[in-house]
Length: 340
Ligand SMILES: Nc1ncnc2c1ncn2[C@@H]1O[C@H](COP(=O)(O)OP(=O)(O)OP(=O)(O)O)[C@@H](O)[C@H]1O
Ligand SMILES: [Mg+2]
Image (cartoon, rainbow, N blue to C red; front, side):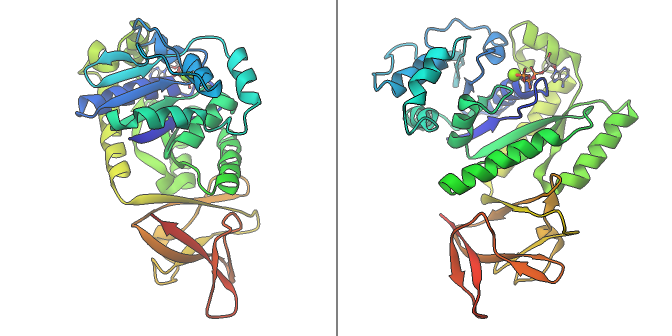
C-alpha cells in the first residue's frame, strides 16, 4: 500500500479537496483506495457523508491503550474498493493517551500496517497544524503531497514543513518524499500566473506538473457530500484530479525516491554529485532553493548503494543530515545512501 499524506499547516489551501478527489480519481483508475481523515475538523468525512461507526480517534485510542480494534465497521465503505476512516471532533482523550507512550508518533503506522494488504493507495488528509496527528501521518507515509494555493504570495509555510522533515530524517533516518501541487489556479489573473512561474522556478522538479484549477463544481461537490466524479464527471475539476492521479501513479510506481536537504544561505547554487551521475555537476541534480536557507532535491534511484556529496562553488561537502558515510579515496568521507 502506497501511503501519501496531504499536508500543509496553512489552512484552506486545498488539502481536503485534494485528498477526497485524488482518492476518488485513483479509485476511478481501478485502484483499491483507503482515505483516512486525520483532521478533527472532519471536512473530508462531511464531504463524503457516509454513515460511520468507528472513527480515527477510536482506532488510535484503542491501539494506544493496547485494546482490541473494533471487529465490525472498522472501515466505512464509500464504494466498491473505496473505504474511509472518518474523523470527528474530540482529540483530548487521544492526546492524553498518546502523551504517555514512547511510540506516540507510530500509532497510525501501526494501524495502517494491519489493513495495508487490502489497498493499493492510502491518502491521509491532515489538519492545518503540525500536531500529533500530522506527525503520525508524516511518520506513516512514504510520500507527502503539499498543496499550495496559487493566489498566495508566501511560501513561508513550506519552510516550517521542511524543518519537520529534516527533524524526522534525523530522528528516524527517513521522511516522506514531498511533492508540491499548485491548487486553485486561475489563469485569468496575472498574479496566479506570476505565482505559478515563481513556484516553478523555486521548486523545480519538486513541483508536480499537474495543477488544480479553480472550479466551482469542486466546492459544490463537497457541499453535496459527493466526490467530483459523482457530482460532475465532465468538469474541469474531474479532469484535473484524473491527471493528478495519473502523475502520482507514475511517480509512485517508478524507481524509489530519496529526498535530500541542505541548509546554507551563502550558496548561489548547489549540486548533488555521486556515483549515480559520475560525480559531475548536472542540471538534473541541481538542488532547488525552497526556503531562505534550505535547498532540496528529490532523486529517483533504483535499489542499490550510492555514494554522494554536495558541491557549491569550489566546496564539496557531506550531507549533514545523514549519519551514514564511507571513506573516500582522498582521505575524507562520502555520504552513503542505501536504497532497499
Ligand atoms: N480548486 C478549487 N476550486 C474551487 N474551490 C476550491 C478549490 N480547492 C479548494 N476549494 C475550496 O476552498 C476551501 C478550502 O479547501 P479545503 O477545505 O480543501 O482546504 P484545506 O487545506 O483542507 O483546509 P483546512 O486547512 O481547513 O483543512 C473549501 O471551501 C474548498 O471547497
Ligand atoms: Mg482540510
